[in-house]
Length: 316
Image (tube, rainbow, N blue to C red; front, side, top):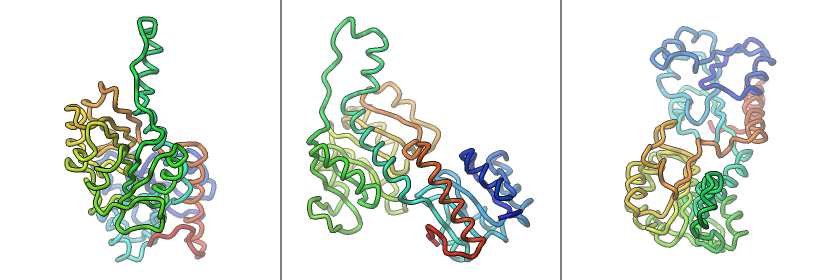
């Protein structure tokens, strides 16, 4: 890939940046440019840029693609592709790849971790012990996870991995997806409201599309109810965030564990004081092992494309 121009939309994993540089790529660091100048930056370097490396927050929208007439491939450092204009890529004949499978286990692990953290109030209990409050009395009783009914929005790779982990805790599994899946041990519901009405924990694990944007709305939240827990390891816009905040503040929802938010990195401040809410900064796949494997997939797809070999994880 000697001298191939690669537009990197975000500050990358050091390993990925080092490997791209080692392979002779010329890197154009879009994240270093002020947001108001990013399209201009693309146009100024358009004669050299043949590839984009994006992620779940900064991909390749139509305007960016139009500014890059020599663009051949978008290699996303993520599974989700909601930040890539796929129709525009198809129209231009631009290849698109992502990083599936390698992050499934870590995301599923975090979903279970968030669930237990919310139900057992682990962050709050940690503060209680550290502050010395334990000397004044016992910590409050919490709720067990084992045996609770787990509902999953989206039974793809990640949804299935979450289901398998929850089964180890003797949790009955139900799900909603576009169609019923060949998993007879899991109960299928044809609407998100029906699913929410029949579970204690609702986990968002579907892809973000126009159809799934705000799939968790007020009606779903109210169906989950005052003892229900919402876990979101999908994308922030899956959930109507103002409605979620209102339900938590008003006590209409039992709790929430959130890895993603509608306007990252901004987190609603109303949630900060709530002990029944656990917040983490979009870290579901953020382990050394997984991020390195994701980087290797990005590198492998770029190399395959420019060597005219089959892509490893082609989407378009």
